[in-house]
Amino acid sequence: MAAGKIVGYAVKYGVKYGPHLVVAAKTLREPATAYAQKKLAEQKARKAAFAEAGTLQAGTVLRVFHEGQPVWVVYSGEEPITSHPPVEVTLAKLVERADLSLRVVPEPPAAAKDRIASAGGAVADKARAALKRTR
Picture 1 (tube, rainbow, N blue to C red):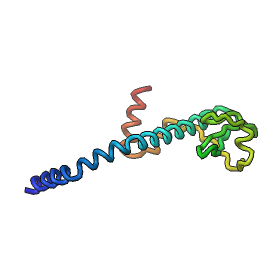
Picture 2 (cartoon, rainbow, N blue to C red):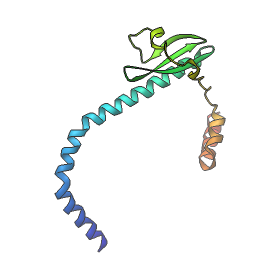
Picture 3 (cartoon, rainbow, N blue to C red):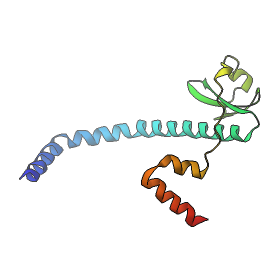
Picture 4 (cartoon, helix red, strand yellow):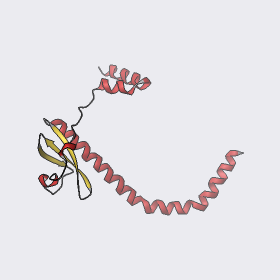
């Protein structure tokens, strides 16, 4: 009996509000897709900057903003090397007013043993078994 009521309500409200949801979905699809792509590009730029800084001696990363968008500047020692994403402004101009004490040192990647230990429980047991099979 309860399942029949749920289906009835679903049909009733689907007929009443369904067309509005379709119009809203079509209208909001483009902005939502653009926003998701923008955030994904920002994450990729950050990851690329930290990966590059990890390969440099005394490599650090500083986040600055250019035209409202975050730009990650990679340093080798005290000298800026590159930026992610690349911008048309020179690096010196990009970081001239930045607080250099906010630079971040990338963490070394964790070893497989450490990642397994941090997982804990049944997940760790499965991972240990898989790791033993690969050796």
